[in-house]
Image (tube, rainbow, N blue to C red):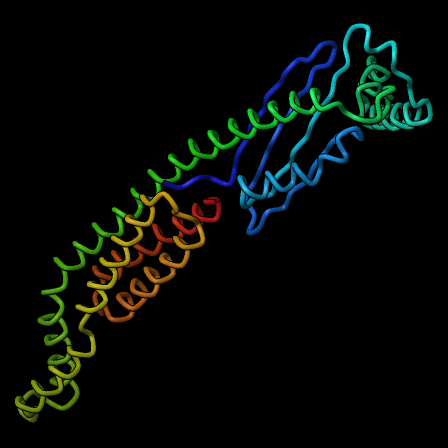
Amino acid sequence: MIKSMTGYGIATSNSGNVKYTVEIKSLNSKFLELSLRLPKIFSEKEFQLRTECSKQIERGKVNLSINVEQTGSAIKAAGIDRELLKHYYNQLKSVSEELNEPGGNLLQLALGLPEVVKYDEDTISDDEWKTVDKTFQQALSAFQDFRAQEGNVLERDIKHRIGIILKNLELVEVEEPNRVPAIRERLNQFLSEAVGAETVDKNRFEQELIYYIDKLDITEEKTRLKAHCNYFIETLANADANGKKLGFISQEIGREINTLGSKANDANMQKLVVGMKEELEKIKEQLLNVL
């Protein structure tokens, strides 16, 4: 079973006069690129959050944000960073004028930006952190569910494309017996036109033809391509399936398809091989987003 690197999860909880919102978003990346947006009161918890994300998210370009919204009487304990508020307001006003857009609620919008509203607390209690951590775990669970659902969609698409490659391989096997007579006829005609049919040594011609046909034999390539495709499907179904391993197998599939194409020497077989290459490229694109 595979998971997508694209994911989204959000969770909220209320504790007294405080509302906590945790949001996790990710896109594909070769490594884990983790960006955290936290209020200052959670600074001491950053390492713990990073460690947990590294264990469970593994790879992807991830944005984690925690928002704290004070409500009711808690707001009375708050102060405002006037200079930062002015700075945000002036920037919003400038952008609004530049875009020729109405700026009716700029002050309210500026008040909601980071660090504008200052609260008396500069640390978080154990009970508060338990609430935040529970909310974080809920968001992480929703995030993982999203990844799994996206992975199921990717898996179905990739299996379908592997099936097309195998179907084209079956059609190649149907076309293959027609190759030798066609090659024999082309070479015979060429020799007849070049040196004359009466001067051609038939025994020597057959010997050279056997040697030439042997060089174009694709039995090993067909066997290996089937094996690689079957191994790909098996790996896709494994619990520990991952995009990197599937990427390596797809490279091996590509090598066999390319060799088939170079040995085909037949227009119909070449068309089937081109179809295989098209499907494999689409598979590789999908694998870039597989965890």
